[in-house]
Length: 111
Image 1 (cartoon, one colour):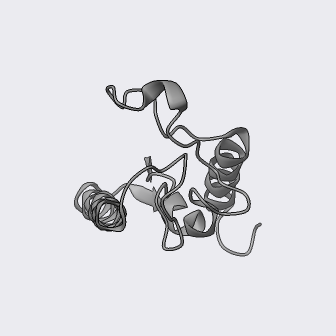
Image 2 (image 1 turned 90 degrees about the horizontal axis):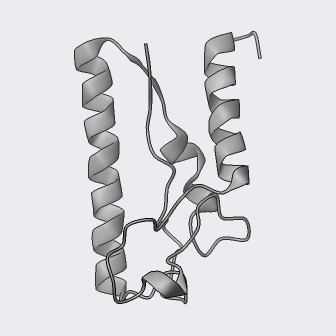
């Protein structure tokens, strides 16, 4: 069984912008939340015996604000309303997830 964690949305270099209209303290809270979610995935994989595919680590340099983000930002229509539908993977992000899964399934030395 494979367990695939989440793409990084708010990375170490993400700053307040149109896509991430949050102050630095809020962005830091999002970073901490992302780290906590990654820890939950790791513990869950250990407890269940699932194999963990860590796309969160792989995508840190592709968070919002990067030259090539693998997730979409907060759209204009969602600001001031519920955040449902925000922060989805881009086509490049989903390709990266698929590539990470394929590499994992091939195993070491077979890629």
